[in-house]
Length: 265
Image 1 (cartoon, rainbow, N blue to C red):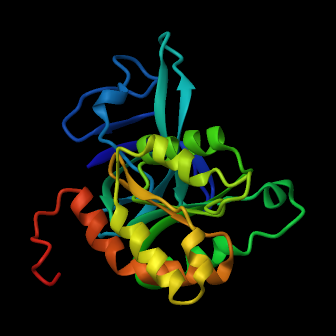
Image 2: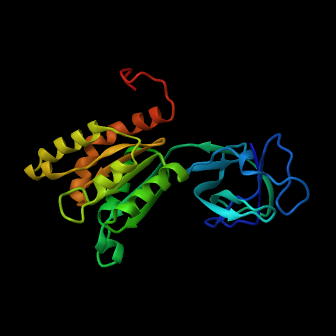
Image 3: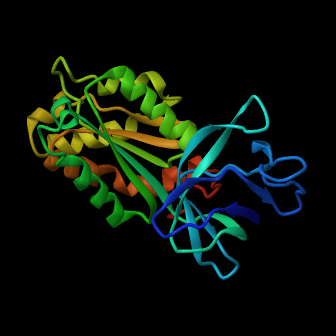
């Protein structure tokens, strides 16, 4: 149980959790007297974590993280960003952190889409398809140009800082000079899952011989599953159908589930 002290929050507003204390920890808010709650006092709150009351009603959800200067020390505070799901007044409220589903981040890589000259057609298809298959507690899309360093930085941030369960990219998996997604992804993966790429290639080859051109990668960063997908909405749908049945079990395993893989779960 966390005792969260926030200003008044209308539904839909987002603000940083700069002051909170777990049950049993005696500390004061940063504006009060005594020891301020240190970042180490708080549990890890990955994106998608709900903060609910004892009845199970979610009041807030973690939608990001930010570093803020501390008013009473030289070090920055690592603060979750909370989005209010309901209206509630200022003051301290006791809430229970709970991860109820899967958090999804998708990244569309395209110079023209990033520049605003073309609509992102693949990202929404991807998100809709995943929502039909998994219980998504939070989802967020991102637009990037075809730039390897930008993609490496964003993948690392989404996995290791934000704590997304599933990170999907769309675009940049072919052989054009601007197709940098596979190499950029491979450089930040802790390890690869070649079976995902093989399954997607087989699904593409069943539709067109051009499927052999794909260089998509899949693997793990921290506890996040990362999968490259093609850029066209049709190819995204075909490739996702080949690997969607594996997502839930893979993510559960990454988070410590000990159920045997052959148990039929």
